[in-house]
Image 1 (cartoon, rainbow, N blue to C red):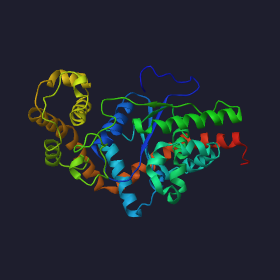
Image 2 (cartoon, one colour):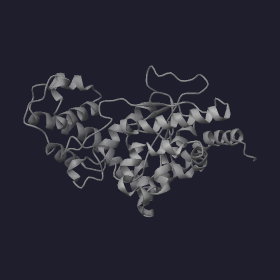
Image 3 (spheres, rainbow, N blue to C red):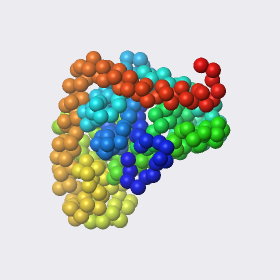
Image 4 (cartoon, rainbow, N blue to C red):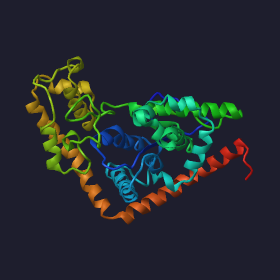
Length: 343
């Protein structure tokens, strides 16, 4: 939980977040989400982390690939440091109340709210009429993911902040419409030096598994040699590194590599620049490569081991779903009572 963020005394602090199992975890996923999840877990606040497979099918997925990607994501969670005994880890479709509350929120949310969502515009583009209804309505399901557990804090990247704001709007409208103070108003938690990791080939673009060039990203399944090679070949500029942040303006590739170093080493951008200011990239890149290999290669190794034991992963997900239902089912039941459903 972020220091200084206040929670209504009526709600126990609880963290919820999730990632779509669409395959190909990258350094961006690690620094922007997984590493932050681990930090939150270790803060002592109850943490719930989901593989949001219902969100994944808003666009067509090959069933076998989806199952594999769900297990790989779970492996990535655990290899990054999430402990299934400390945090609740599960895949969304095993807790049917997500879809049930999602429908209730479909009836609370307004069409205009959905049409304003930036990611809907970006993903649907000019083919909005051919996009799935699920893609249009999924922010209501995301609100259900969060509010089903009365989560008070949601670690997200800057590009997901709008979805948490919509969740707040839905919670506020539900509480107002039914005259209750039932759902908390969750806070987005956006912090860290590399919550948005950029491409190694183009510092103006977000690191993405969909980029045609594998050299644009570090995959969490990359071995040590691949990690080091990709950093050595990362795009830079001919100037030396600055000593202060102002010197990174207009230098997106330099800024990206400095931010990656800072995030991996648990430093601020300013701390890194104080150490490396004046150095050339020929000196800085090997430092970054060594650090990245030290931090990421154990994750790759453990992910590989876990993926060889899918039964172990499935058992973790089933147990996580049981624990999630213990929290979710009473909240769902009370929601239906508030709405007026005869049960």
